[in-house]
Image (cartoon, rainbow, N blue to C red; front, side, top):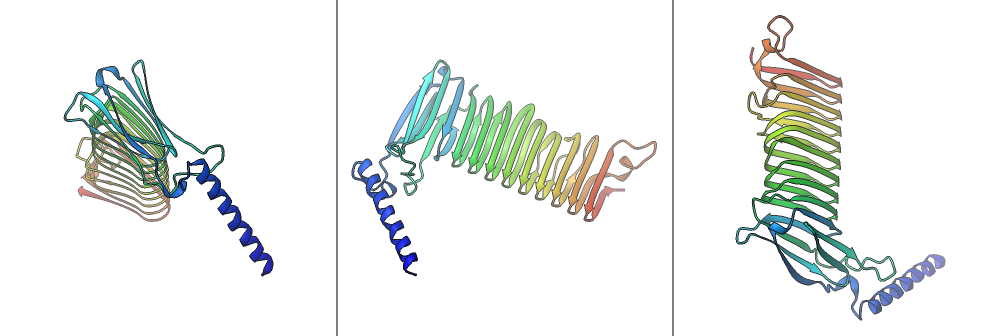
Length: 315
């Protein structure tokens, strides 16, 4: 017991020394309980920007429509604990966050208020957006942009009322929600490690490719030519896809259920689950999938451990 008390006291003293050192280096403020961030603004004409590059440490990012100006307007915070740098070189606008540790690996902002970087962009802009967010949410809404690349380590991604030529999203830990998304006959690529994916009202996409390790995937009310979804652990649900809007559906999960409701495909449907049930309620004629001279489409289902149930609206 005496040894335990001595070790505990040693840790307490060490902690107090660290707090004292951090307070001294932070101009007399206790870093973990004070915020020295200053709110700032930056404005640039949309005509001067072709690329927007974001490298954000731990702030939330909000990109939204600028309804009052033809300029890009940025509202951000910068300070001792977290420094935000904005640079404009040629046609590229870069926003980067740096964490100041003052030579020691101490997080001076763990108890500081969560900051937000708000970027307002004119709705019809031909810019490319590249976002790297280490800790924080990414929110993009009411915009039309050229290309979108989003890479999030820890945080959720929300895309609403967005139009792009093509989009690629990578998430390590976090949920992805996309609602009212349009792309002109191009691709939507999604790769996630841990998190749920919910897509609704996706239109104009030629190829949807989703590669997920852990989490449920839900796709509804969308017009997509080719759907390819691979999941290691989690359920896959497709619902209410308009007739003749989808050519091919290819779904595969190692552990999880696959469910299809009120949809069909013009060419092929492939459903594979190693451990899980498969339920497909197809808005189609059974004769379109049966062998024989009238066969027009292919349907393949496979479940190693689980039940397979396929229903047709018209037999």
